[in-house]
Image (cartoon, rainbow, N blue to C red):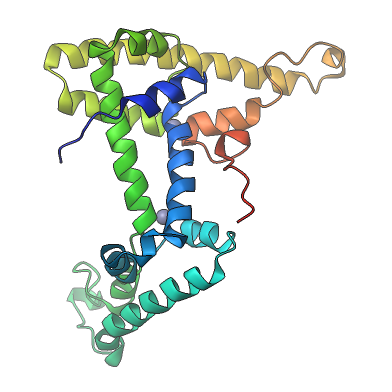
Length: 251
Ligand SMILES: [Zn+2]
Ligand SMILES: [Zn+2]
């Protein structure tokens, strides 16, 4: 897949000094895609074909459910459900007919048992796909800008690294899209930056736990008040606390 640079959002995200610029961009994209799915996007024929076919994961059904447009959600769910019913008709017509494989494995290795087919039918999510594509474009942009944009390089060198899932992604993009020498230089700088910041957060989390000791009760919190949230998010990608919070909506 060919990616294009998307410089401005990346620079803006770095300027906030957050723990993971890609997590911040992810939350922003997710908010926009959930909104547009219930607004303009699902009226477009191409998008409807996709949402009917692929549907959504539980997280994105939940996020759409929490917005106000119940009719939009009902229409989308209805036509998706019609597609699901159509494709399961054959599968469920004869649920007892799966072949007994060797040792009575009932087609376990081949992926063609009825339970496997049901699960496979419900895999995938249109919004996850959109987010994935955007984050890959941003990861590509980060790897490219490091060698082509001095403003970015400065911001990168002063940044707090990434969450670990996004660290892995950016390293992959460096390997795939930079020359061998540049990829090595970039990954070395990135690895040093990441290790410094992992240790910093680990220290902040430790101080959080030590604050529960009565002897430390009067000592200042420093940066540790939200260290639990930031530690979890650094390890797993933004999922708790302020960093995972989407903007308030009153739609
Ligand atoms: Zn992240
Ligand atoms: Zn999803």
